[in-house]
View (spheres, each protein chain N blue to C red):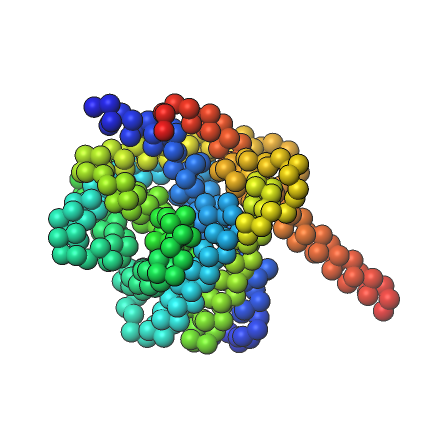
Length: 216
Length: 193
């Protein structure tokens, strides 16, 4: 396959907005919704996923020459599972309380489609440097969306942020927001917002281009 | 007997894997655009999930725990699931070509369905025995299929409705799922915790 010209900065930035794993690709939905009932859970989950994503992309990219294409998926899964086990046990040792809350969702990073998707679509085809940058960008984009979701849900659902109360005693928590339906609806609204912004931005750029044409 | 019934009702309705536990959402969003594909995916998942739940339970009890290899659980379970999926595909291909034609294309997708791995891990967490593990897997899969088929029916209606432009695509699907999830919360009173 012919390699296209790569720009490290571009590879990193595309994960943040243009190809954001949550808002644009709508991948990795399970952890996105399940652990974002508080901001701290969301942040820990995102950091763990970031670690696994960058680690496995690095290894897949470094080993690409030796991985036979018939068994590549199983090998990717084993590589990913190894990093997940590392993350799982490190978290258990450092933050046992959060680890308990996240429960089965840490081992479930193995089946997060973002990671396998990046390994298959990007890391297995490009040099290590770009694979790591791409993974870091995707991880950062995932971090961004997870934190956004966690913050919104925690503020509305319990009136706190990172367990610090934000409002006075008169605040009536909107409990639905930390329950499952709140997750779906918040994500739906955030998707709506990101669709709207993307659309408005395209329109704006079009108008600017048109104005420039007229000016010339 | 009552315990077993509780496991079934609990996993199908009360703790529905998709709407309450947020598992298997990727395939839930992916294959729910058409009713037919939803039914096919539901059947294939039910079969694999029940089988892999049992297999993982046996391997955990007779291999991992006696050898003290609990830390390898994640890796071993995902491999077992991949093997079960591959095996199901081969057996189906040989024995029942008709079934293979209907379900074949969904089988590889099931390996990365997080509900399958989650059932295996939750079985360990909840300390289920073999029969309980089988039932838990079966219940989870039935719950998944039920919601998948219902949701596909709704999405077929939404597809022809006049949805505002920014809402189109995943946004409206998420909000629909949110409303469904709210409806399923009504089942929470069925089983006393």
